Length: 263
Image 1 (tube, rainbow, N blue to C red):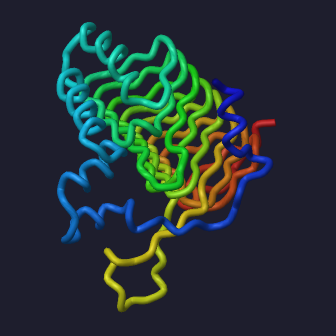
Image 2: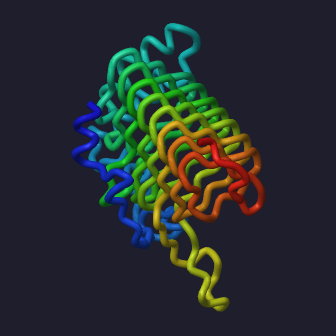
């Protein structure tokens, strides 16, 4: 599976640093606009495919097994979620009440654990979606949200509970990285050049976020769009990262500044 992912995804060496405008069709405001049937909007935002058969399969599997308790629920979800997702490896554990949106764009490797109440939203018109490699752990209440972007979690990434990863272009977190609770990666920003335009109508652009391997993020850290964090770095708790952090660095503060090297 890893070789397949490397073929379809860029690495840090050829990272695209340009900005991408997020398509209005995948933003939540398109749900509240008049016009179009509720069924069509539901299929586009949740099911990810049009057609009654795709809708029926999604509804039956999620309704029957999403809230099934105990070991029986984990066992049944391990069997039936394979019919929704793009690809699922061996030994995957799905917790209770997991929300899957556009599951046909979600790839999960071997021995992955997704705890209760997580949301994996891979929606988009031109994106690859969400790729979770072998040995990844997603803590309870964690959200992976794409708006025509990609999220890539490399091998053995560990996300604590209540983490939030939002991608309008691409977020990649390197292997063996540990992320504490309440950390927020936000790969997107509003274009606020005109004060006359309502906030809900502002354009949204995204550059992406790249995190090297073997990094450690303290609780409640905030990582802004366009940032690259080098491998083997430590980001302190509640740090606000709005500039690149070199590899082997320890960075703390608001905004985050390098205070020490690990070499």
